[in-house]
Length: 290
Image (cartoon, rainbow, N blue to C red; front, top):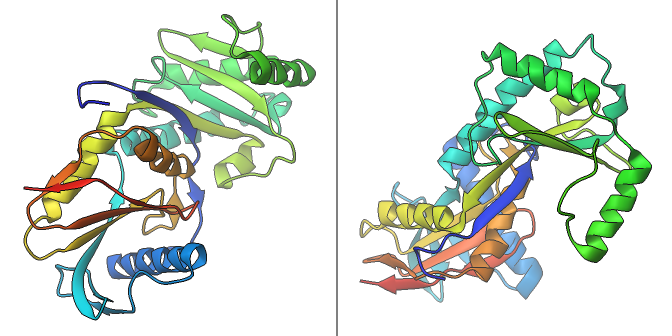
């Protein structure tokens, strides 16, 4: 795939706590490094380096590999536009939860509601957009959840692919503002405090181009290519300092493997490794030295 080809990646995500809040950036970096070492040990039977010590910032760390010290920085692969969309959506849904407290939403119990704006390509509106909040609540109240019908539709999709048109009641779409799809979940458990309050999950469906991910990777490499870093460890789908991760971001790993573009470029960095937090997968990303 060339850089001018656009492969669009639709997904939905629910912020999930996987760690307690961490006291500092340095602690987060050490957690990232040790998780990488552990996953390498589990998969290969050996660790990627024998010893580690704190670096001079930069680098974050100095690691012992084959009896020589190498300088390593840890970075997180995050797409700013996606994180902005998630932040706006969280604030919006908090307002939806408040506005829906006295409305009948019990029919959505134990479901996953994936919501999108502008076919999944637009940012959610701000929480101060009261008309949209009201319209979302009204639509959630009115949607019919035919659990048996949805189960049959899901089986049909698995066997024959998506239908040209979804049956009425399975999906609510307003092409001018928003849309959502309701999916019952077997043995549903709340993923966060908001879903526990609502009794169902409300997740944002958002679309990215694969080139957005590669552009961010190149930005990270270029930003650390200062002659003081030998290796860059890119954490994919890992938690932030608040201990919150966005699980769907672990899909960046398979996408990077299955949709190669031109190699990343650097003058000084000699290795870029992607570590997928949830799966433990480790990918050596193609790199061309200038």
